[in-house]
Image (cartoon, rainbow over all chains, first blue to last red; front, top):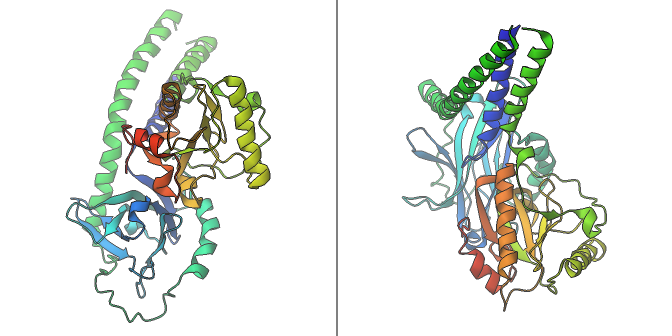
Length: 224
Length: 193
């Protein structure tokens, strides 16, 4: 019975540590396989006329460009692709849409200014976690319901329907990295797990040490 | 171990664990609550996803106030204008700052404001200095109140620790927060152009 209580307490501490980790540099979204990611990267007016790109950051820091906005239409062109960008310069936001997300899509993404410099200007970073089962989010940001309300505005507003073969050269757009081989996926998962597990574990160890001592002392004084 | 003692220990440890979330035990500076300044009830329903990354600083471009009494009246005026004339669900800002050095609760930490367009509104807290700061700066006590409010936001976990401050004119086509105030916020440590 005592053991169960102690484990329950440690479990609760773990949750509170996860919440404390809210001061991260990146946003986080948790989706289920098959869902569509809808995300908005905001930017200030100095970037109104700039093109924007959506990248995936691999472990090791190498970034792959998945889509970028056109100069004139402010939308991205990707025939048969899964990544769509719509730049709303009045609102100061790029709407990013990734359809039919898979577990292999889990990882770090970012909005950057395009053309991409050697030291890229990053607007926002997003940690995407795609799960197999129903989305069971422990983090405070429950986004999916909100996005479903925003989704209806996207298809009618798109200026360039994606089924149209584009006469413009979208040569700069790299192929979507769907053929990510399994070793990369496990590496990404392993590193993202470590970047969460280690700080949480350190704090947990310290706290549980203090509390175990407290527990033992109170137990002793009450004379079990 | 006897049951009451186990219960007591368990309660103590639970409180310690809950204390780690910090929200209830934060010593935030005084904020004049809605009821106190005579706010009309809010009709707003859109929540903010917390923690928030951005803070947008604006000015009301209206008359300033430098006493608690006159500022209370001024916040009411601003809310009235926003709700009756502009037709919004509440005063546009999450918080307002008076030249009396007090922070006035607008939509608060949890509700989306109506200051910077739909997308920025959903990702930011909008604070507004009551007055027009094109040609003059707000007094130090008002600037202190704003800084204290933002520190409070971080302590509560409603603002990211690495939150970014933007001027209203950085996100909208406007003079707000006024040249003088804009110059000041650009020196703030969390300001990002």
